[in-house]
Each structure stands twice: as C-alpha cells, then as structure tokens.
Length: 116
Length: 117
Image 1 (cartoon, rainbow over the protein chains, first blue to last red):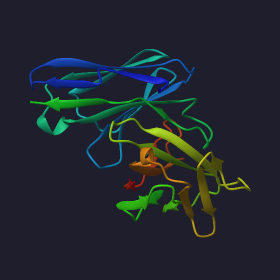
Image 2: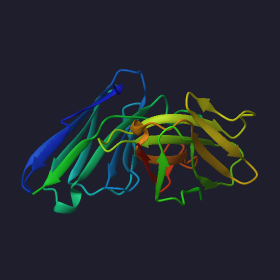
Image 3: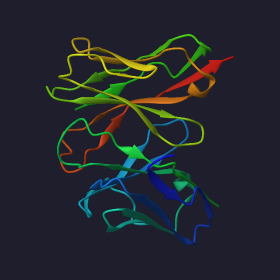
C-alpha cells in the first residue's frame, strides 16, 4: 500500500465539467507535487507546493488549478479540460523540497483521467 | 543542464535470471543523487533504490542493486532472480538542483521490462 493516497482512481468527465483530484499524505512531508503522465512516457512535473505555498508552476494551463489546504492535502481542480488532457495524474510528496539530494519522492497510485 | 538517458526501450528476461537496466546521466554538479522507480501497468510509481554521488558503496535493497560507475556517469539497476511481478516500466531519475525550491525530478524515458515464465 502506498503512503500517498489519491482519489478517485478513475475519472471520466466531459469538457464542460468541473471536477477535483485529491491527494493525501500522512508522512509529515512538506513538499507535494502534481505530475501528468502519458502512456509509456515519463511523468511531467506540473506543480510543486513547498510548505503549503505554490513554489513551481510549470506553465500549466489555467484550466488546472492546484490547491494545498494544509500540509497533508493537495487538490487539483479541473475545469473545461481538453481531450489531450487525458492522462494519468500522479501526486507525490517528499520530506522537504529545498535541501538534500537524497530525498525520494513518494508517489500515489494516480488518477486515470479521460476527457470525452 | 541535467539529463538522464535510458537506451533500452524494452527488455525481456527469463524468470529467475538477473537483468541489468542501463542509465547514464549528465550533470556538472559534484553532489547529486540518482533514483530508480518501478511503475507496473496499474500506474503507481514505486521508489526502489537511491545512490548518492558521494556514497562509497553501491546501493542495495533486497533483489535490487545499483552498479554505480561515477567516472562513466552510469547508474545501472541490477535485478537479481527476476520474478513475474517485476514486469513493469522502470525509470531512472535525478533531482534537478537548480530547482532549489522545487526538487523537480528529471526522468529518463524508461525501460519496459517483461519477465518470461
């Protein structure tokens, strides 16, 4: 079992819908990440939260809106998505984003998102 | 800029045999770390093993070991006694130190390993 929990595991939505992806970790980690991954490709970083503040936005379209309500939770709000946004969305956390090269990121199981 | 290269898009191995997955990297930093992740078809990314640039010994975790050759800038993953459950995509990665507020991971393109019974 992973220590990073993502819900839902699967999501199908229309292009006009609004939905949210949720991520939760209870490892006391202070950095949390959203990645997007297409089939048979490596994950691509979308956002980084460090100590509950957004520290990196990799030029992600505004139809993706991240939120970090507290140090354990990370949400990704979705609105007016396009078919090309269909992908696996992975959440990850690490102890601290700012120091050290030896802290692994721990990933959740991901949410498989399909846009109709 | 940092870069990770995995040159084996797909590999086959017979069950119970050992297999080596290649990873080369490029960085100008003296202090860096390399990670290997396993991703089964179900999607979760599982952290397997870490090697630091200053570690004197090659990292080992159970059946996983890292063949770290610093001068060659290679960090190959060795899986001993392959099992059917080892069939997955394997990614080599390193942290991008320029992202000092993010800890961004730079991934290779991955190697898809298939274990044959």
